[in-house]
Image (cartoon, rainbow, N blue to C red):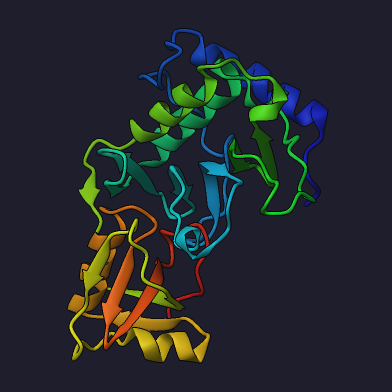
Amino acid sequence: MGKPGGLHLLCLLLILLPLAACRITEAPTASPPIPEGLIRWERSPESIVFQADVRGGSDDISRLGDIPLCTIYGDNRIVWVNELDAFHVEVLYDTVSNAAIYDFVAYLTVNERIYTYAALADPQQTAETAPVVETVTLNVNEREHSADGFSGWDGGWFSRVLRACHRISQTPILFAPTGGWVTVEASEYNIQAPNVNWSPGAALNFANIAASGEPQWVTGADIVTLWNYLHSMPSSLRFYQNDGYYRAALQIPGVSRTSPPEP
């Protein structure tokens, strides 16, 4: 099936308008049922229906395990980041109803006019020069649409959309990994960076992973401990093990922005 063009999107707006007429601008609220099939998405756990994120800036190892601010996946999972303070974040998730996603898409389409904004950041910019920019992606009805902060939305637009995404969930659950891909690079002692002493006999051996040059799938208690350190301390964090200093990143399939699939 081909991608719907401007006429198709106009028709979608006209149909959704009466359904969203009474909504507030802060978040989706109760509304008449949306006809089944009007809003469709790929029902795969790997597909992304909606994502709000901040891109750009440095791409060193500290960014490898980044988690987008809010993502809705094709299997109706929602995963988002709750910032507790400057360096401490928690990751929450939930599984929501079709109706909740329908209502959110209607809110984006009508209240926030997402299709009137575009992705205008230069994709050719290098990591050293790429500005930090707010981005959103919506992928429904066989059409993926992206937009970013260069497209002219008002100063509160991204915050409203992000809050609305968070509020889809009614029963959020704190995420803790059972397994993940660990990438390690050797480092030097840095007096300005926090340092964590990692048990010399731990199953997670930083030197071995760094020497391999490849991410390693790790499970068990070590992965939870690493996850907690990475989400409660500055990105300059170093791990000390067997007389060496290391920096590490953790990628979780279906949670991190990018990740190899689970083995």
